[in-house]
Length: 200
Image 1: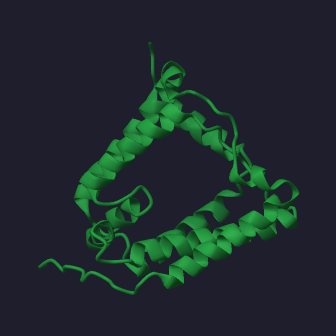
Image 2: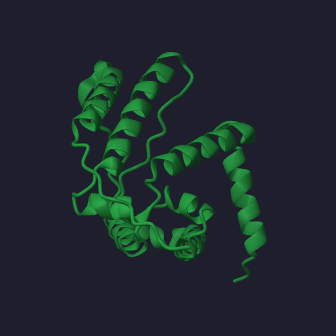
Image 3: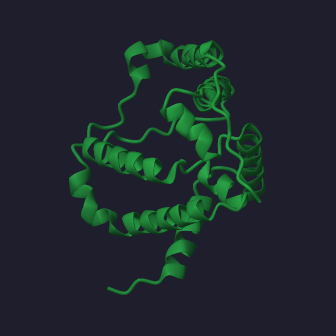
């Protein structure tokens, strides 16, 4: 079976650009802002992630809850204004369980997640670079083999959402959920682990 890596990535990028997620400059701007916030808050360091795992530092969960809350509230208003819409993925139980296990093992070994890893690489962390390269290769391999792997991804329960329980009031669930996430972010303790600074 012939496989051209350049053609594969070229096709993938072309497909993403046609999915109407926004212009390239807008996507780049959002990406730069995301990286800036992560670097400023220092959640791209092993100490912060390890502190959270040991329940000795809460900067990471505070940032996560706050981000999810603000995004949920923003999504509520964007949908009301007609600027956004839901894009629900089907629940494939086998894939969720297997993917969750692989993700947890990878994060435990690397010490960072796919969101904070690239920011750490930009600061010169070579160990994280190996994980980033491995993740890109694994993602490309999964995409290429997906037709053959699809059978072990099931059972497929369809596009289920919690908002379906609330019927016509589903949008308000998103808004209240966002408020709850923001409240949790502020209620979590301010305890934080000290960041180790290596010698230059």
